[in-house]
Length: 138
Image (cartoon, rainbow, N blue to C red; front, side):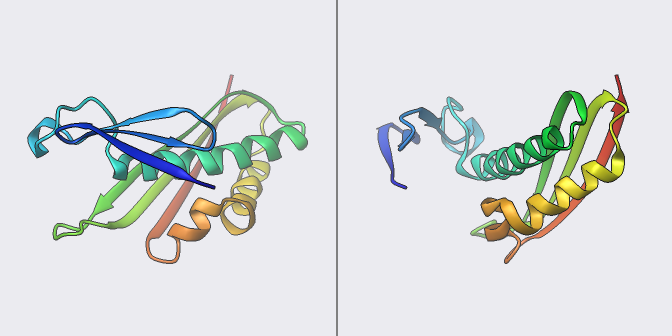
């Protein structure tokens, strides 16, 4: 896997990896940027959420769970001193569907966290990651 980050101006960059999609990167206005893109730390949370979401929805589909909506809501707490790393990340898996089994969701999350999600596998070595599963009918 390869990636490239190209400077545009100020603190505004464009990232591009093997997939060819461009990702705008920037700092917030209060940190000297223009706010025209995601920050690198935001992308880490999005990457974690995307990695585990793909695992979990795939597993739930194989378990024939009737999912009508699905999201992973993440929150990262950061250290106050530089390099301001994540100190704790919480993830809530919110699954909406018809007769979705909570135990099936919890097992899918467990498999993602422990076996399949490479982003989780990397981050959990240095960050405490907590999860919660919510199932809604509909």
